[in-house]
Length: 132
Image (cartoon, rainbow, N blue to C red):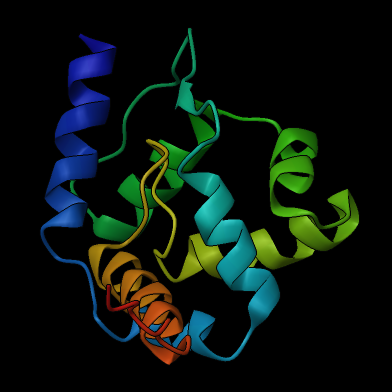
């Protein structure tokens, strides 16, 4: 029951995600590294969730994050950053709904990061083809 409620609340909030979240990570390499590492982290709902809130978005968002378990140390390791820096940078990522408490990332941010990677491949000089 609690797990279904967690998923339901999260899906409701994901439907209302904002493209402006991209602006938060666009000029901060540390935030990008955390967002990338977040998707490979073991993130799961707490085993004993607290009582859910009413339908207000802010309270639901806080409730979701209060009922999730993840390791800041593992996130630091995967992102190549220090744990204190990750802890400090997580607040704006969570507060601006860049990271989701199910181990996913705002879809607009995800698209932005993928486009950056694709541009890196396009920027590489092309190898000349050999003619036989």
